[in-house]
Length: 106
Image (cartoon, rainbow, N blue to C red; front, side):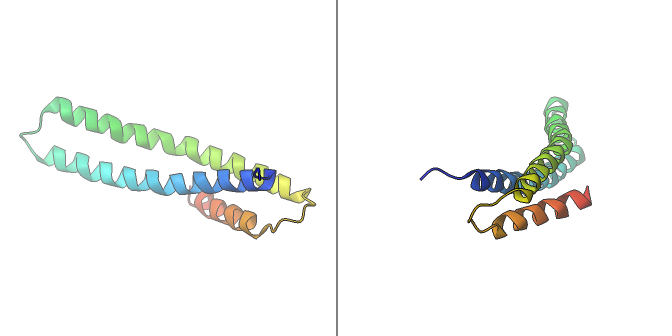
């Protein structure tokens, strides 16, 4: 059976919320790695520069991710306003709440 529009919208928002956790962990790990490299005088400057670029890439990605989370959350909220189907909307409401918590921090 093909997924319904509600399922698709919920899963998409849940995926983005999960990605945010992964990216924050990656950012934290990369910050530690760069700090460790900076403390080591034997590290090649090129290697340090490349790791700093990775760190900057992750930092630049997060604002875009928050915009996407907001868009997907708004889309799901609008869909629920006019939803008349028989599916349980509890999971959708939980996904919206998770997204709101993330967005309130940023």
